[in-house]
Amino acid sequence: MAKMGTSSRVAAAIVAVLGFVLSLAVVCNGGKTSSFVRKVEKTVDMPLDSDVFKVPPGYNAPQQVHITQGDQLGKAVIVSWVTVEEPGSNTVLYWSAYSKKQKSEGKVTTYKFYNYTSGYIHHTTIRNLKFNTKYYYVVGIGHTERQFWFITPPEVGPDVPYTFGLIGDLGQSFDSNKTLTHYELNPQKGQAVLFVGDLSYADTYPNHDNVRWDTWGRFTERSVAYQPWIWTAGNHEIDFAPEIDETKPFKPYTHRYHVPYKASGSTAPFWYSIKRASAYIIVLSSYSAYGKYTPQYKWLEQELPKVNRSETPWLIVLMHSPWYNSYNYHYMEGETMRVMYEPWFVKYKVDVVFAGHVHAYERSERISNVAYNIVNGICIPVKDQSAPVYITIGDGGNLEGLATNMTEPQPAYSAYREASFGHATFDIKNRTHAYYGWHRNQDGYAVTADSMWFFNRYYHPVDDSTSAQ
Ligand SMILES: [Fe+2]
Image (tube, rainbow, N blue to C red; front, top):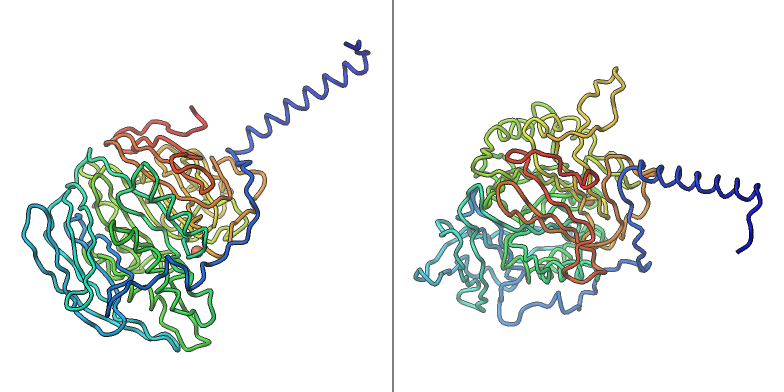
């Protein structure tokens, strides 16, 4: 080994100290920015003749079958489907191993959008179901019948385990298909999907080609016909196109996707709440008025005190545009809603907020930024154990591609961020613990690329930050 001279020893010492300082700087620099290397490929939509878009065979066969929760408690299901040749029957025939066959009647609707006319869109609510029961159901009665099944949630209660899937900004690209497949094959087995907005991306086509709403309905049927997806409206649901005289916002979305908003006293289908197992889920609309005195504001003001944590310990909020986002895309778009509602989220100890919109993944520490009052300059988010964790899960894989450009340095509040497509699961174990895992599409189905044990804010409000462990 060559002997070091004094000057080279000093140089080595300087390098070592510099290295230490630099590594400290990285540690202080917020959380982790994943160094995962992905192939650079363009995100493209699947062509219209793809097998996932195939029209089911048979005269007037129901297609785009989808279900969602139909009441506040989980004893009702809204079944929706589209027929093309003629309206056909609105009846859903359903039964369980313990009950005889029953029928429920619904309604049919259609809409026009520029030069597009929809098929016959059916919505039928099945009520008074038994909890925790597998039901079979048939639609298309009188023409081509198709049979599906779903399992109702367990009765609402504080220690009821339940696993939610989380998907956002899905679209209908080859990557979207991978995301859905990964969700379906995840051994964690999500029982219902919390969908954080931006469904079909039909509005990215000329004249918002609504044929792409139909293809999206057929693509997702393989999951959403069998388990409820809880819908949040995103900006791609607005479909506002004055240049072609389409000026009624949310027209295709509201005709196609019904939600049980009236059951929670809401006056519009863009904000509402449901209880499911041990979770209370509040859906908010980033694209409806939310300022003081507005319907959404008044509803949320009355809604939060109604949440009984001894019945539903887990308080989850869904919205489309994130409040905390350190990517250079949609930067601060959620800021005005944060200013309005964040003090309530801290006061009522929301466990977690899921949002989409940014086509990447990010998880925050428990932080709040409620002290700022214009003149005091206190505008930096601080750690707050009464505050939710904010998760951006807008990485479903739509044709707009990944958001890869991040603000630097990573803010202290950002615990983990990565520009990869994927989905997540939120696995509630009991009133105190839930296991959260994010899955990137490049990994095996069981691999969690980011995970966290959530401690419930009402029953177990101790520090659960991943950096503190
Ligand atoms: Fe969006």
